[in-house]
Each structure stands twice: as C-alpha cells, then as structure tokens.
Image (cartoon, rainbow, N blue to C red; front, top):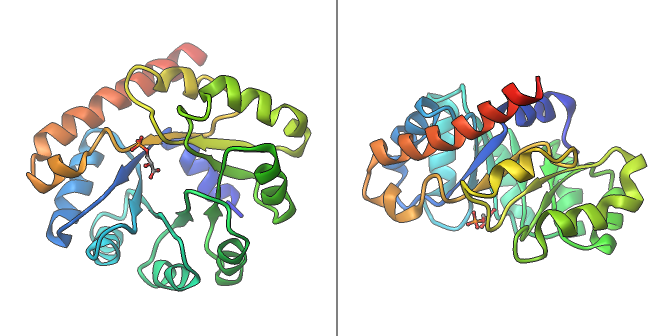
Length: 219
Ligand code: 3PG
C-alpha cells in the first residue's frame, strides 16, 4: 500500500509534520517555512474546510515537499485526496472500506493501528507500513516492540504519531521498526494561524537537527 518510492521518501525525510490549516492562504508560506527548516514531508489533516485547497496549493507551489493527507475518514475523502494531488494518505484508525477505496484509487495509504488484531487486519489488506497511533498513550516504543514482535518476518514498519516531541523523537527514530516519525508540535495550529513562519522554521530545524545527528551516528 505504500510503494517503495514513497517509503524511501519517508525514510529520507525522517519526520512528518502533522498540520491543521484554517486558512488556505497559509498553506504555501507554511510549507516553505517547514522546508527551510529541513522538514520534507507533511500530513495535512482533513479537519478543517481549508484542508483540501491547502493541499492542492502546496502540491502545485511547493513540489519538493512530500505532501500527504491525514484524518481520512470516508471513501469520498479518498477521492478528494487523490483529486487534490496528495502523494499519500493516512488515517487514525483501520477501516476496511477506506483501505479498499485507497487501493482502488491507487493512493498510497497507511492505516492507523495500535493492537495486534488491527495489525493482522492491515496485513490481510496488504498494508506493510502503518501509522502507529496513538503512539505514546498506548505504550510507546515498548508497546510497539511487543505488538510487532510476532509479525517481523512480514517486513512491516511504522510511522509513530501521537504524543511525540523533541524529547522522545530520537528514541523512536532509532528503532528498526520505525521508518519515520511525526507530530503536530513542529507547526501547531495556533502558530500557523498567527502566521509565525519564523517560529515554525525554528521548530522544524530543531527536529531536523535531531534526525541528522542520529543519522550521522548510525553511518
Ligand atoms: C495525528 O493526527 O497524526 C496526531 O494527532 C498527531 O499527534 P500529536 O498531535 O500528538 O503530535
């Protein structure tokens, strides 16, 4: 469900900024601020009226950022997401109707899971890269390791989201189970609404520096 080309971009980006945008006019300056700070992937959530228009603007004007859509809760939203030009879609949960619709539409898609039963259902639908959500409140890395252990031979990996921050992101990124991490702390909704692009660029750079340091240690 997540092709190698997109998977490679998640791996090299390392961090996915989760965004809630209230005004589509903020979309392009926001994406540019993130990119300047080193963030190369976004999950633009379908939680506001401005979301799809924002995504379409980013896709056309900031093509260097890997732009996906999150909080996809209906089959219609899969169609809208594809139409807006998203590179991938994710959802907080695992919903067979949504996964099948994404497959039919050719949209690279990662469902959200946090239990072995959900993981098995995702595998049955040929999902190998999954969103691990909500990561921290469900037990964090320790829970992820225990949950995934019986399935490692199936070549799975995860994008943990929910409760991640500057303090815990390096631990997640160091796990072989993790292909990228994400969170909303880099560009909070109120900071976006205040158009504080400098603050967002700084927050992006702080997260990027942690990712880069880790990569240097591993190489
Ligand atoms: C998401 O939508 O992916 C999560 O809400 C992100 O979680 P966070 O707000 O705790 O970073």
